[in-house]
Length: 387
Image 1: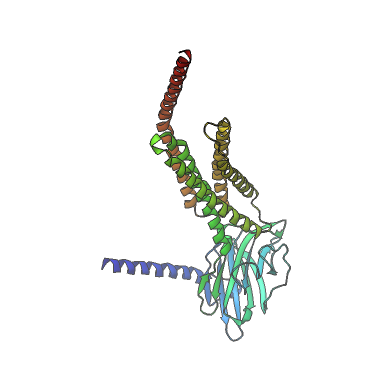
Image 2: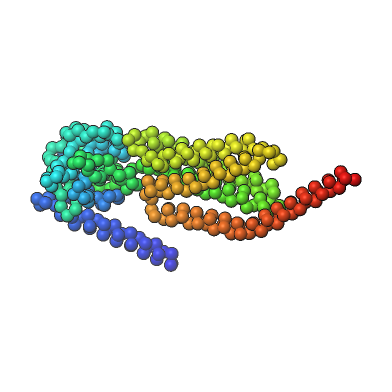
């Protein structure tokens, strides 16, 4: 009974919230006495779409509204081929220096179209377009002929800055990268279109965070502290190798995915993040070769190998932490992700400090014992020679 009541309450809350959203959308007013039969509060950029569909001729009267600075621009359009900017026919509204609002009608051949040519839409516009700026938001009006005479269309929208009066590239925050959905102009239903590039960016970030930011530091902690305990030998070594090798494999997968994403985003380069990623991969690869070339403990070059191995390893950990934060700044996920990684770093650091305090006395006693044993063996050898 209690469970059924909770389900009913949850359903009621959802109905009320959706009704409130719809009411906010329907309560919008427009200049010139314009009214629209349906509306949709879009899931990103605080934008909304209002329209009236005319089944007799397959057209829709559309009003798109999105907040923006007066020095920015907003855009809305339709992509008959799928849910992304490439292949979209869009209306872009902006202002000139005098405050006059203009509208650009352009076709985007790909997501990184270098130029925007006016009047190149791939569908007909029987009426309009027109645009206005009021109360911190642009509104674009147009009557569009729905491509293919289909009521179901992939719609796209966007917002960005201007530079010297020209349309500049929009940000690459998740909200901008997820600004498209499939809309039925007849029923008003909408579904979010999948964003494969955003999904792959998230996978790239997750792989690298786990590999370089978690597994590699854990492997370093195991090697530095567990080896002090004689009972942990040789288990610590195999645990260290397992962490480092699995971290390297996942890290290379994430690094390769990052390169692929970079090649698909011509003109968008995060130079510091990219360079740090290449440096981390190179240093980690050197560590793999170092394992293959590891000299015996009694070899005279073992000391130099240890210095090289430790310095490169700690460099990878420090650079990885810096680059993960840079990656989080690029992806701009919910603040909880950055907080979670900070907690992970703090936890690993706290564990390292505790183990440092525990293992230092053990290591000092072990060194003294080894020195005493070496001295005793040396004295015994001299006595035998004298005898």
